[in-house]
Amino acid sequence: MVKQRDTFNERPVYTLSEISKSIENIIAKTYIKPYYIKAEILKLNYYPHSGHCYPELVEKENGKIKTQLRAVIWATQFRDINERFIKITGEPLKEDIGILCLATIEFSSQHGLSLHIQDIEPTFTLGELVKNRMEVIQKLKMEHIFNANKLKKLPLVPKRVAVISVETSKGYSDFMVTLSQNNWNYRFECELFPSILQGDKAIISISYQLDMIAKRKEQFDCVVIVRGGGGDVGMSCYDDYQLASKVATCPIPVISGIGHSTNETVTDMVAFENKITPTEVAYFLIQQFHNFSIQIDELKNQLLKKTDEILTDQEIYFNQIGQLLKYSSEKWGNKKMKEVDLISQKIRFYTSKMIEGAKNNIIQAETKVKLLHPENVLKRGYSITFYNGKAIKNHTDIPENGEITTQLWNGKLQSLVKKHEK
Image (cartoon, rainbow, N blue to C red; front, side, top):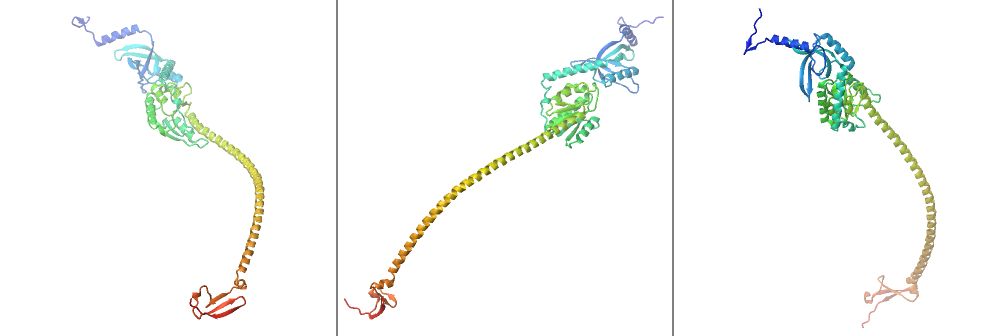
């Protein structure tokens, strides 16, 4: 006996399982073969204990999720897909990458609608990375910042280095060892700014540290970003616009050494300088020191050479001056000697004249003195009268009856004074 279906408002009522079974049958009849579907892995949802993977796939438009659908990759298929993905891309399946998958569309009463992924094409993911890279490059060029960091000036001796890396990274260790053990004993001052170096979190982490360094830009000569090796998928964060623009607009030169040997990332392209490995970055910095050292040696040699040239020129010049001075001195000396001889002759002549004149004057003076001598005066009939030993000049000097002495040329007279009245 067939059970009669319930109705409501004259319309049949179905159970949930009946609707679910109907949908399952319709999908099974409609989607009878697998389809190639392109999407982006929002979340991987891999469970190591079972080996199964339940990715959440999305399609975005203008950065917003347009469609979202659950998928499943059973353990056996996931292992094969992941191994092939690693072999071609160098990295395992991960979140936030575009994929092209081969999947069947299935519906179950318990789990609902899902995509059962049978295969994933790794080359498509690589192509998506290239496409994204080209879009980011074009955007940076349109904003006129693509070459901004390359226009920065690296100091002649880049001694103070801000390092963005992880302390436990082999790349960081290689970089520091190479710097510290250089053959010329150059000394660098490095400060580590720890950062995640892979995946979407690396974009935020590295960008943050670049901002921190920019705030202390006066303390550093350059920034280096170093990490160990990785496949192209693992490097996709370095093609991100946000990170590449931070590097491009960094106020001091950025040198990248993020460990890849194939295509350059956009971050490499916009950096002041990019090297394949952290060790090569260290060699680059050491070479800057060495280049400066060579310039100093060349300048020193040029200075010594120029000094020798100047000293030689000056020696020749002073020798010439010495010879000229010697010749001039001799000539001048001869001239002066002649002048001295002439002056000496004149001095001797005038001296003789002066001595002769002086002698004549002395003779004349002696004659006058002799003529004026009292004895000669007395001889001429003159006499001198003394009173009390003093020559008499006035008659008032002699008293009445005073005894006076009269000196004649050939004798003396003694007399008594008699005064007469007028």
